Length: 336
Image 1 (cartoon, rainbow, N blue to C red):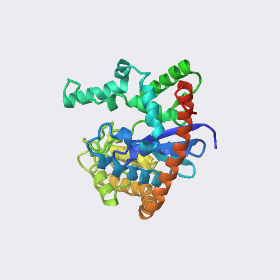
Image 2: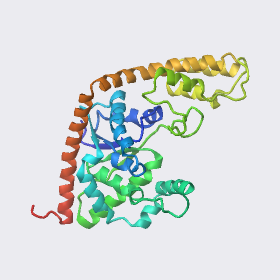
Image 3: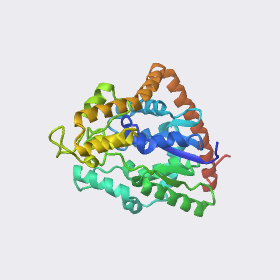
Image 4: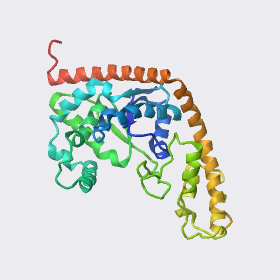
């Protein structure tokens, strides 16, 4: 195993969908055998906008773990851990917060975009903005540095947060001496996966996502309602597959028949219903092994608990070592 460390993960706010899988999780599965991999279930960060619904966050910690295990995250190669169980992360967050100005946090492009969304919903007085929300990038910097993360797979939208973490590392090392490792981004080459309705964003709230734990019946219903070329009125009408989400998902799943799908669609030799049924079949081929693996872990919850406990213990040990190093640099290692 490479000595390079990767930190990646998700907030436990819901189950993973195929957008998550093709956009990020598939790459994690591939990379875990070449890197020392830490996968964070970021429950504290989930509370930044779910603080009034702790039951939701608690339930989804286990759901997220099941999703990870079902798609091939290997606990013998990846340390899956729960953020709130790592006290060093909280301490590092407090220490780093002294080094970042409020104005810098407001200038973060991702934060600015999310602030705009919040203000459109709650008004422009800023009363809905919490300290935790504004300081989210500082918390992420603590996540990354707590494990000496060197490589961080991210999407374009998370680059500003990573750059802010890198700024914190550089400033810390400049003041206190070389202590922290500066993480580098590995950008996903997979574009954001579109929803079944053609929306550029896939999500639960939009009702346009296929989740990894969806049943056959649910998947079938969703695909039968997927967006197709609106100009195709009759079965034999030629259509444009490039604006059809059914064709989009045929390509996503690497359907070996995708060339015929495209040609037949253009020539009016393929009806939308039969095309959707073929996609349902391919989607079932993709999801069935994931469902089977998930079913095993659902029937053996003690194994999931052990995996989370052992992953958290390993993460705790590493983060505590980093915190000790940080405290020594800041000269707050009293009674050592």
